[in-house]
Amino acid sequence: MKAMRLSAPGHALVEVDEPAPLPGPGQVRIEVRACGVCRTDLHLLDGELPQARYPVVPGHEVVGIVDAAGPGVSSPAVGEQVGVPWLGRSCGHCHYCLQGRENLCDTPVLTGCNRDGGYASHVVADAAFCLPLPEEDYPDAAEAAPLLCAGLIGGRALSLAGECERIGLYGFGAAAHLLIQVATFQGKDVCAFTREGDQAAQQFAMSLGAVWAGSSLSPPPFPLDAALIFAPAGELVPLALRTVRKGGSVVCGGIHMSDIPSFPYAWLWEERRLLSVANLTRDDGRAFLALAARAKVKVHVRRYALNDANKALEDLRRGHLQGAAVLVP
Image 1 (tube, rainbow, N blue to C red):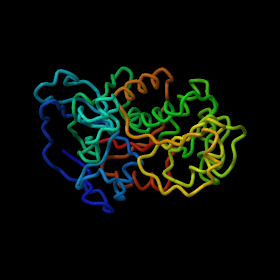
Image 2 (image 1 turned 135 degrees about the vertical axis):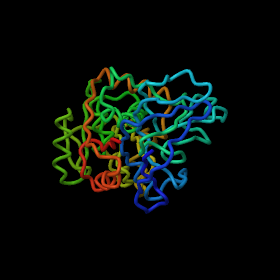
Image 3 (image 1 turned 90 degrees about the vertical axis):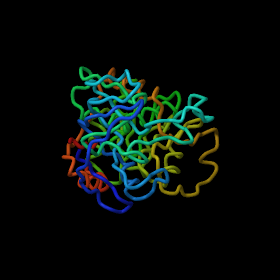
Image 4 (image 1 turned 60 degrees about the vertical axis):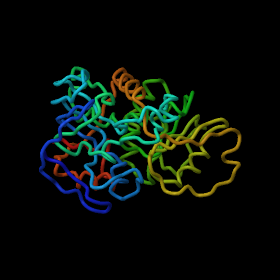
């Protein structure tokens, strides 16, 4: 199989050609049709994820066809299209798993982080943690791929925000461009916050239904019920707190963020909430994929060949993308 392997933090990915892995008990092997490029992959490259092991094949927004099944697997069947998300396995017996909070598992297997992921022609995954992606609902694998992290994390962030009618999205990239479509489908008013002077991103947000778009340094036209932060910039947290009403929420959607600067307690007071999103559950995945289908979410992608993975990552780092980058083996 072909794969793009990362040997150590700070290195470029290198194309390798090696035997395709065989699925073990409870596992399936998937022929990859598409794999999204996520900001988390940049954190992996930069050595910012303590969960990571090296060398590793990145990629946790995987869509493909099951082409082999290990012992004990009855579903998914060979020939079915599935998605492989970040959470590759949970232990099933720690305190959090027993509470139904497998996203907080103490010893998770994470796709493309401590297990080889989808920057490859083939990948092995636990059958029980694959998400169904019927080809009749998701005929374009490249457009489905970003839903498996950018979409799922955005959906979980929105659910953790609680009841809200007016929301702000900070960092208008892969996650926000999906979530705005879901939120407007639900009848919410969405404000989009971008880098200062990023007119292209602001226009993109307005084209997808934002009622206002502007700089992260600018106040929105009305108090927000919730602000969701997808950019990995800690300095956005105090800014977002200033935009939410009493009792409102600020939800940090990234796995890594720069340090949050100090701010007056008064900005948090009046029962404002500040919380983070950690990973996802399989129930999250199934619920969001069903909602995205009902909302007819249009995924904006730029396709790259597998061996152009380094270019895709650099384009993401430099902010040269609208929507999501996707590798197509």
